[in-house]
Amino acid sequence: MKQLVQSEWERLWKRKTTWLLFFSVPLVLLGAAKYLHTQNQALSTDLPQYAVAWNFPILGLSEMLITVFQGIILILIAFSVTEEYRTGQLRMVLIRSYSYQEILFAKFIVTIGTIVLFFAIYFAVSYLLGMIIFDAPAKFPLFYHQELATWADGLLYNVKFYGIAMFTVLAIVSILFFIGVVSHTTTTMIGTSIGYLLFSFAYPNVLSIMKPLLGDTLYMKLFFTSIPMIQWQGITAMLAEHPKWTGWIIFVISMTIIIFNVLTFLIVKKKDSYI
Amino acid sequence: MIVKNVWISEFERMFKRKKTWVGLFVYLFLLGFECLFLYGVGGQSFYDPDHVVGLNSLNTAPFFLRELGLFLIFVLIPMFVVDSFNGEYTSGAYRLVLLRPQGRAKLFAIKWSVQGVLIFGLLVFTWLAATIYGYLVFPNVTEVSFFNTGELQSSEAFLYVLTFYAIALLILLAILTIGSLISTVMPNVILSYIGIIGFLIGGLYVSDHFSFFITFTDSIFQVLGKQNMTLIPLAFSIVLISAILNVTIWTKRDWME
Image (cartoon, rainbow over all chains, first blue to last red):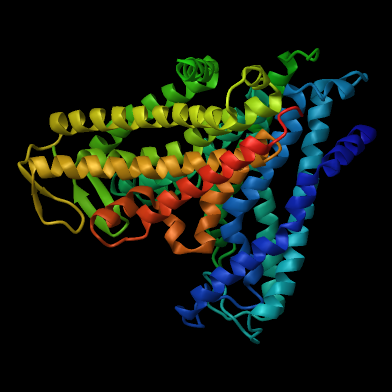
């Protein structure tokens, strides 16, 4: 198994695309910084949305989490799951005495590892950029917190934020692995995945029209069945002074991870290894 | 005569792909769902997030594209374009077409027009379905006003809706053309698709003028309400510039790889 993971890891880093993705981190963050900088002009400094060096790591992430990060996961999985299987490159690996389940498991670990690494680099670079571009005040406000925070509180908050973000990403990876395994071509895989993401943005908005009918609690529960919505609003709700929806969100994410991995496992079991 | 045959061959190849059929069926399904959705929310839609509008027999058609446009822009068109302009080339299937002594630019024009006709057909179908649906389900009126326009008679409203769909077609063709350029430049299917999505979203970070790919119908209402003068020239230049660039690359590229 260890060798299998190692072989997957090497194949992943052999692709120029993977390196390109990692070198794009500073560019993505510069884009986010530029955007937040113009936003700052219209905001008062006592709002939590006002970007300073200490909250730039999360402000710069929350927007990119649902676009760039999802895109990166999509690319990684499209290459390693769908393309390798459909073009027959995987035959070289399947010639050994590994089952397709084992190989897929190795791919899962490697994908998660790469994304964790990506998060870590994003975190480090965003602190660096934040210090250069934004002010570094002694105290600053956090989302849904009464008290102002120091940079150390902010650091703890940011680490927690990144931790939960990685947890949500685990759910997305599970879903996209499933789509990647069932799709017959890479275009189908990407099209379906983007369709899934669009759908996850759309249905909570549709539900908001029926809010009076559903009642607040049920509405928010349904709202947070959508992983991108958890990434967009759920994480800050969970990290509030009085945390909200924590149990529900953890339940939704865990169920997503379990259901989609079981589905993938069942499909892969039936799949022909003689591709 | 030859052009016609190549065109038919291109068209048949497109419909030979299962995914074309599946994509069109999903679109039909979403169209039906959109009908139910507009009925379910009580015949209301939006010019933009701040302006609510009640639907009636004359103004329903444009609002169908508000939700369906997202599917067209981010799923259907990129999928078709990437398969046609990158998939066939990178898999080597296109060599069989290139065997015959056809002008490369001509082949490009044929591919482009096959995709264009499909988009056109989809829009016409949507317009027809939405117009009929509006007449049948929503209150009948003889006068209607749109975003930033005065009261329009039914014939004027009809013309307004047609212009609306024409601008929508222009935007979708811009996506088709820039998508074909990206597909030609990128080395494989995955990167072409991501490249197109990156262009559509990344434009936002360059300038607000490029936001019409995302805010689709909202921007078209602004154009027709004379509040957005840049969309049409911008979309036209995207079509022109990327078509010229693409033809240049097509005719010069090494097809033997």
